[in-house]
Length: 152
Image (cartoon, rainbow, N blue to C red; front, top):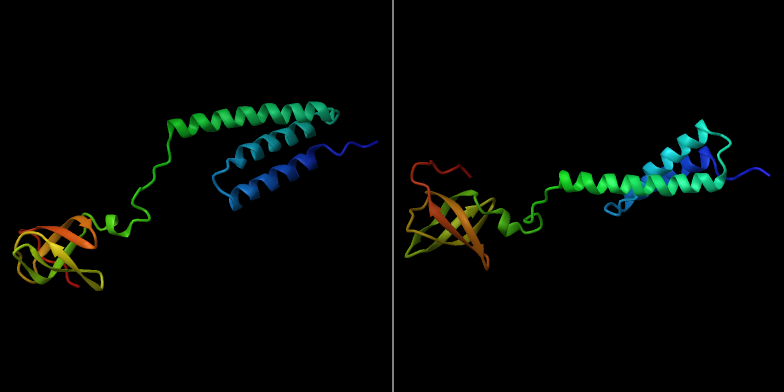
């Protein structure tokens, strides 16, 4: 009776796990795919390796791959911008042009192709300002006296 386990089965498992990692990222199936690929290599190098030993090798290499992966992510963390889905927070630091003069702390600034309500020091129309905060759809700006306003 021919064993159904072996190099081709482990390579297929590695391929399926690798594709699954691409389709559902973040589940860490890539470590299992690596373990399956190593087991496939072992099955080709040692063709008489019994199925129990193949499954044991897969389990062992899965643990090793996961531990190496955990250490890798601990030593080299993936940086993420917490503002990724917060459009207003991404505006902080952007240089804008005063659209309607800021008088008594209120006015409007041009952001992209829109005009937003703004608070800040009194500034004439056309002055450059930097966004320092966004709250409730209103941007807070600070004056940039030595910088020419960007053209819209």
